Image 1 (cartoon, helix red, strand yellow):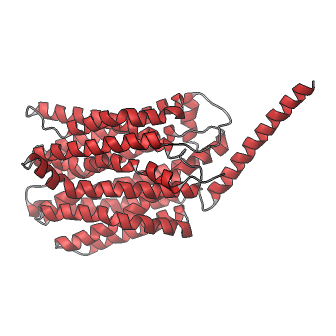
Image 2 (tube, helix red, strand yellow):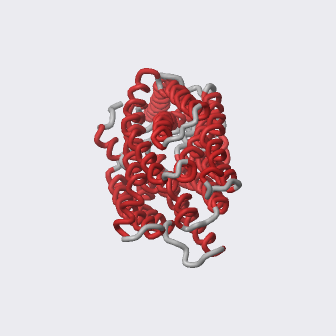
Image 3 (cartoon, rainbow, N blue to C red):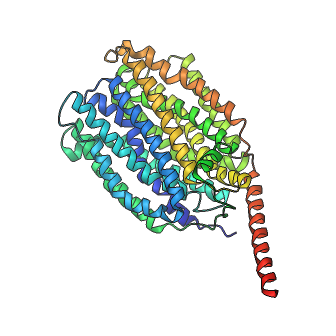
Length: 454
């Protein structure tokens, strides 16, 4: 089977630059924007964020089911047609509410629901396309690495540029700065997604043996051992990473008294990802993707244990700690997106049914549930402390940043032990699928020949 050109794979991977302009802004700044620019109580803001995240997961799964039933030919149409509405919804999310109190809460919640629905409508088809842009594991790892590099670039732009660029565009700080930056990101993001959609071409993927009713298709996903174990390990990992990421700005502002150092830390975390991605990619070539997961978990847990054992009192020392955790987080996310397409063929080999968008919908559901859980835990734990007082919030923030994530990472490593996708197993699966397809073709041709002779 011919390999896809690296240029075509790189163009496709560039779509993650657009998605991460939106996603990283939601992950790094949206909750902080609610509490610090709109002055909502953190428990209220966290509850809105968590409920919207849960809706995001449900919508993603529903869209995944719908897209799979409609057929892969429509994936590109969703990507191109949804690009502009998605950008507009992103801008709306950063527009300050026109009224205070309950109306403000309703406004931001409606904005979140709209944004997350459109994000799922565009992102789930794009993710499903990553299983079709190439059938080769090496190409998929390259796409995963390229997506992460594109996402890293977007994350750096968001982390470092949101406040200063927004302030420069709007001429003021606070809420107008965030909305101005969002407008710029939306224009760029929409243009990138349209370009990626128009340039997309898919590989010759193995055909499914049969089609089954929707309910059985959804059930078969949970009989796919490779997918279930990866999804469970991912969920535990995301809870840990999200709790850490969302605590950064609050920790620097209220525990260290230096908010600007927090923004610098976010920028450094995102920038180091550009170096970490190719390092993890090369490591995966030597030890395999599954083993890479354990290596990244070990690094992450060592950093968190150090943070617990040693009192890091300066912004620089905390920045170094966060950079190390970000390197580990990059390794885990790289392994996730490199392994996930391979679980599709694993399930297809065992059950004869190929599910793509549904699996990515399930992943999105688990991911959003994990983010919602971590945000709720963080919001309510910090809401019970004196967040406005540097001394009052230190203990709660320290617990949120290190101890709970440490436990979830240990759980993630345990769950990954049961994943069957060892090194080289996907190549075996592909060979067996091709042999089955050739055998079916030979039988059809033999039957047609026999009819012709008769």
